[in-house]
Image (tube, rainbow, N blue to C red; front, top):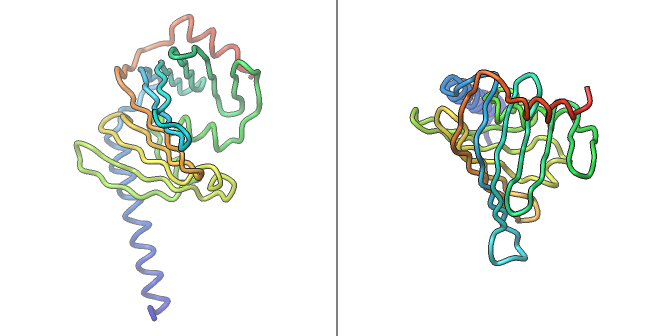
Length: 193
């Protein structure tokens, strides 16, 4: 049997290591008010042989939220800020954690993720990997884990759902413009204040 003091020491070392890795990775990430690029999403459902593949573009704005525009196979638009989510089906309030996760991943603020997830990771200086396990019991019923891979940017997000389905999103052609386009501004203005 492991003495309590030793167990507490081992647990605190593990938490300290995870925090150190998170700090190291966060320091490598490019942080700007605006990040945009393209994505390819591959969704694997247990009931289908072939994955469902969609492509599109995304825009992260530190002050406005996220624009997620699917272009193929079916065009759609998803707008997310800290409090609202807007799709073709209308607008709805979102739990604060949801808005935080979107902004933390696309906005290079990984420290925010530690609020909702147990984080383990590895930093190889030129590439890094983080595994996120939900803390919230409700979220655990939907997501088993999320794995993030990157370098100076988030490059790949892989989500394992509790039902066995998986989603892999690859991010490419990432840029950091000085300002939003008029079209992007108009999209963000559609979200409620």
